Image 1 (cartoon, rainbow, N blue to C red):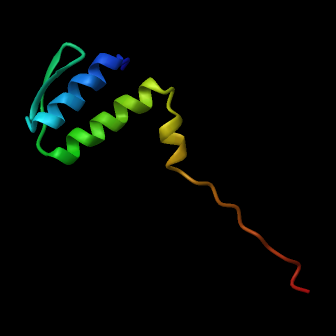
Image 2 (image 1 turned 135 degrees about the vertical axis):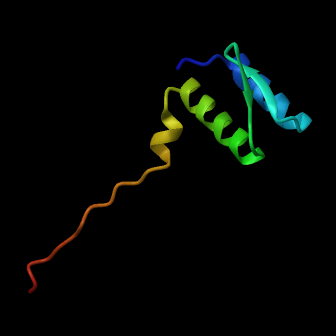
Length: 69
């Protein structure tokens, strides 16, 4: 789903006002909690930035071994 900066701005304003309803991308949404609203805002911001935020949250680790000497 493609988001616009205006969608992030509307959701940020709704969070600041303390409301649990917002109209985003032409759709009326009702959130259960502030945490859910913040997660949605992070998702929108990640989408707007090209997904860079999602990649930064995951780390890749590689196993190191020796020959046992």
